[in-house]
Image (cartoon, rainbow, N blue to C red; front, top):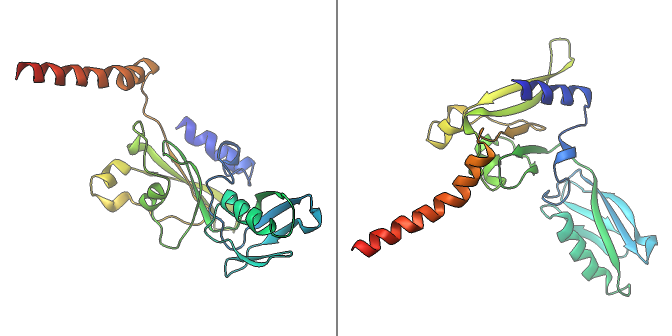
Amino acid sequence: MRLTVILALLINIFPGFGFSQIMPEDKDYFITPGDVISINVFPAEEFSREVTVQPDGTVEVPLLGSIKVEGKKAIELQNILIAKFSKYVSNPSITVSIKKFSSNRVAIIGEVNSTGYQSFNSGMRVLDLVAQAGGFKDYAKLKKVRIFRKTKGPEGKERNQVIHIDMEKVMNGDMADNEVLLCGDIVHVPKKNFSKTTKWISDNFVPWLTVITFGIVISRT
């Protein structure tokens, strides 16, 4: 309850908060139409630009023309541009960053293997997002997953909605809680309330105990 209140307050106080302070903005994000990309070229700085990804997934880059960028990560695009600019500029140093994201994204934080923003598709559900994020970590508290969503109130005022879902049921085949996501949703997967000692025992002692037990069984046979 306390975590829910804190997160809701952060979203309310900082409309653009979106958990960007604790999430990798560029590294794991796939470029989509509408994103604004900053391309910095050195030493040929006259070719540096901020460009908007067009609906067809391309951007216009000086000297190179139209480049397909949709579905690529910033680092992938950076390497492509280095290879292409190398034909015209000696030893180019190029950096690519996302200056402004399109609205076609959702976010997931907490106990998943790849936290951050993910591309949003109409009809996308929580389980789809989890799959894109590489699945749950071992200590994910599946019964207490939350979706933070901005909605419009009766008078058109923006308000924050928190949806509680039980992903343990979903993982066991009950799809009732596999909520349909909306653009801009933030999904939080909390961690189980294990003490540090319990986690250390689970991570370090239990695997060795399994090996020892297996060895005893082998020796007896």
